[in-house]
Length: 386
Image (cartoon, rainbow, N blue to C red; front, side):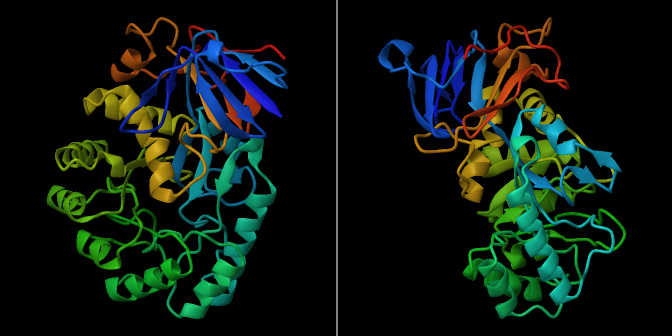
């Protein structure tokens, strides 16, 4: 199946070292990116799907690095249906679980937590709400787990750990051992950072984060309560892991993290999540809002801020999405400057703090949504020709 998108205004690459690519046309074959460039130089004939972008911007689909799903497109945390579909309308095409912690009666015994993790991985593998790729099945580590448990999980297809610290394991030595077992079997880890988020969780300070050594410093700006400034700076200085900034955290701490990462030349480690559904609710535009906030208040070019939301996460989490690169999944968001928003173009408008209007999302080369019901209306809209 051949997808052709022509008349693209600009292509955002997701690559922080080169965030804008030259070209006005992109081709995908069988759901994978094939080539891009000037339309006159490409073979656009015999397209199964032809999209006229009408001058809007194309970017890799956005990635929410930190969600707490439960089952299907429903969350009991806020008694809300279709929250994943709603997030698709905010340009997010991939979501990553930090633990299915809001499941009522979540099992905490080793047999039960393994069973739920495997089931969660399966049901989101078998059912993709509105086409969105949900990487789930992220068990929260508990006392009593041994190395063979992590092997069992990996053999069953589990590739993630839920936030370290949300279970009974709250000391760095034990957590580090379990994280190393997980890493040995190809399971990626993240850690809760900051004060307690809900009753039953606890404080995770910089010392425990560093001792545990996870692959992702989860919500470094707090979820919701952030660590003191000196501890955030220490983590930025000491960690080679992904520095995850979330919507449901402390905005001031988010900017401190961004500014510190820039001073340390570590902007490539910055990734974004929402940390929802949570007590703050569901944020369908949470990732887009983070891009606009960090760009405008953090004085980061909008094309770089978008990399925090796709390419950086792709690289830090070893994903098949989030970059304009041959062979990567053809997952895109097409967007334009919102109607009557200040700024000369989309990027300038976003750097002024405005949300763009999403006109279309595409996942695996298939159009999944057209004009967003959640973003402000765009100046221009892409159109499906065939």
